[in-house]
Length: 188
Image (cartoon, rainbow, N blue to C red; front, side, top):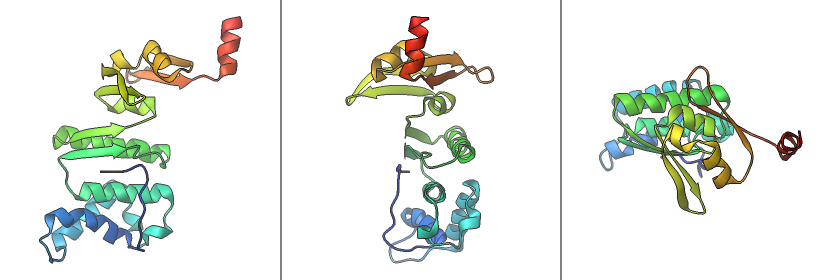
């Protein structure tokens, strides 16, 4: 699992934090093996965080720490990934990089992925199925093109949006509109 935000009570090194992801694979009272350390390094490299390996987790920015938490999850070699706003502290490069990793895991390793996102554009580009939730209930669910419609988004979120189609991917491109734009549009 990759939570939206992670807290560490102790000043672990980045490598120690990632190796924690290997504990399900390590016998009780045993130490990590060279293979576990190699897997941790590989996970850090995949997340663009290998250069942070010797730093303390408390010395990292929120975005760097989130990449390390993601690497810890990858080090587990999971069959199922649960992601709760995993890229909320990341700049756009790392958002795309990490979701590319997730997509590759899903396709090549047959890893199931359940992610919570508030960014409709990321959801449109990376998800196969989408569910819109409101007040704890599913309001719409299914294929990206069926769910991310003006009507569904307007009804669930009660705000004006503009939807177009991304020329490169053919997926919905969603832009929230300020009340000023909506008012001008309806008056003109």
